[in-house]
Amino acid sequence: MRVKFRVSIYKDGKKLKKVDLVGKKDPFSIGLRYILEFKYLEATKWLMLSEDSYEKYFLLGLINQALGQDHQAKEFFQEAEKHPPKTSYTFQIEHPQSSSL
Image (cartoon, rainbow, N blue to C red; front, side):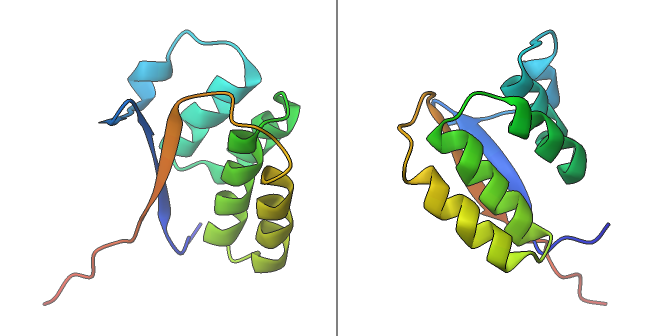
């Protein structure tokens, strides 16, 4: 599946890898792990099951934006503003580097 960009997840300034989330069984952590594996549709399912938070809806917005669903992304970003943050995770967009031949 082609995406516009990838989502990177950081905690306390350290970029997370999927091994950092192995063993965590809550829906939010499972969703984060799928994001790190670039399985955005599967991540969406798990995030929808997680507790409401700013991070949940912001990530759902980023996922939808990456998949080209800009209208849905906007709705999730608006919903994110209604909820307080519950974690110290931060998120960044990584654009694929173009290879010059």
